[in-house]
Length: 404
Image (cartoon, rainbow, N blue to C red; front, top):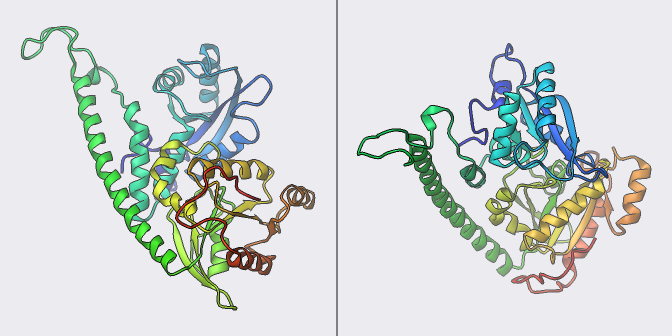
């Protein structure tokens, strides 16, 4: 699978190598914020970027936040700040700069030329984490498709060998101004990536058709479906294990599990339903991933109930709820009934939990780790699934807002 680190060795790979003598790669995190502090790097965004870097095996050497109304089209920061960034990279002995936003190819070139180190944006970092954590053939195909969609417009050559302009007289009599060897090589690479993307899209479509057959069978057999959704690292897999006795991987890192896991649950009073653990969301989830994982995310759009799991111990819990609901709107799942679950109650500050419960009446408070509130959750699930559905399972009212 092609990597999202477009040149040289993947930084995280060095920390995973079986050699204790290798130094961990170090990054300078880069963000922009508006003069009023409401920009993309406000509200804990750089804290989340640091967690993403740690998930990919990269340590953080320092941070830089630039106050700007909008990114500089050539260097993201502006030439003066790039020089300051280069000094910070040198003094902190950083190996890579990670920007908290999606950079254009020109901005990547401007920053790399100015700092002399690799520059990666938030999208590239998330794609690399997804590639590391995908296990099934379906997940790997979806991630590779997202990577290629990201890489295709960013293909570029390096140095004389990849020069885009043919100089002097070339074989066949071509003169100055025709395609050089680099331009021709880039076009060959683009064609190869497009062919690979067509193959992957067809593979994903075949998987989606099989998934649809399974969903239709469950509908025909009148088995209700519950899709577990939520922000990454909210405890979705741990909750699945508690409710269904499953063996989903549980780890205190972002995007620990990517592949959907479906388990059937039978309650003591005879109600049978399916629980599906879906991919976690994150602030500004790359659109390439949303597009590539659309067939998997349809598990939510076709569910009878969305079990929206929230890390109640996170100071950004309210923002996480808004982010998840935004992604659900984007994929057409806003009409699916929602049951909000405030997880990690054992870690949450009482005052913070009280605010969440006040703002989200009807939410169920649980701790997947200790088992607190699980009986209440099972009861709420039973009540929701036994209630008559407000719409036929074959369609969702696109204009209906999700309840809380």
